Image (cartoon, rainbow, N blue to C red; front, side, top):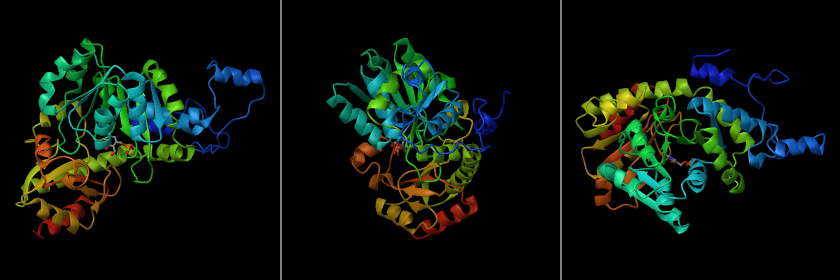
Length: 390
Ligand code: PLP
């Protein structure tokens, strides 16, 4: 039967296979290897003539199969691979398909920037770093013949929005693949493959996992492209553990309800902060005066649970606000059920000069908020009491 709803599909599409004991959730296959009846049987799986479990590091384990089926559904992809972290999925992707060069457009997670700008060149892989404000130079850069254009949208922490369809159209004219890091938006709010992207990556540590208790990654795309990534994941040893796969698979069943609530609460927090006298600026794609709002409306079906606020005060006063928050925990990461706050100038973007941060649209008075599942009224009250301390 064809289901229309994403959560229905996530709960019930299991390739028609039912657990022999009737378990609604695939049990954890906590095993490294699988035994066969004959060498002919094992050879059929080794040669890929027959699908089946074989060895967990290869990803050939039923707990991982069940997860990957859900991951593909989430992004409307032909196939998906699970990884032990978001960075693992990026590293495998760049090594498999980005060896001609990787163009990183806009601001990105610090580890991603380090991998592309500093580490890939050490392996002889050219990298090109373009800020969002330099998007006009993308075509010139594409002429150099890169394998992949990689970007986040919305970006971290300035929430800059890139036009996925337009970038794909341009990149494809030069035979370059487009990979979108969809971690911030989540597949509930944005579907890059349907807009023309070739690949999507996720730090599943964030919204997909959603409970701040697992580290995992995912890569979605066509079977043909993912087949080229498979040996890299296998031999770089980047496999997700069956226990983690099972936890992630469990979390995906509630992804849609979690994200919908997070969208709603983040909008309420953004609106309250927009009116607050001690807030200079609110960066949230759902606000009509946000520069990327029209584009976000076009390519996103929800505006997400992430926002940044700029305190009308010094960097020190901003730190004081963060320190005085009681519900928002002062911690890196995002996308979990608990609300988190970071001051990018003291954490993710600490390594940059104030001028460089400014060039990226990040003030030293910026606080990044990841809105969780607490009642929005409690979150707003918490921000108000912390702001009253300056
Ligand atoms: N992409 C984004 C947008 C992130 O925020 C992060 C981590 O914070 C990563 C990728 C890397 O993910 P992981 O920590 O799961 O390796």
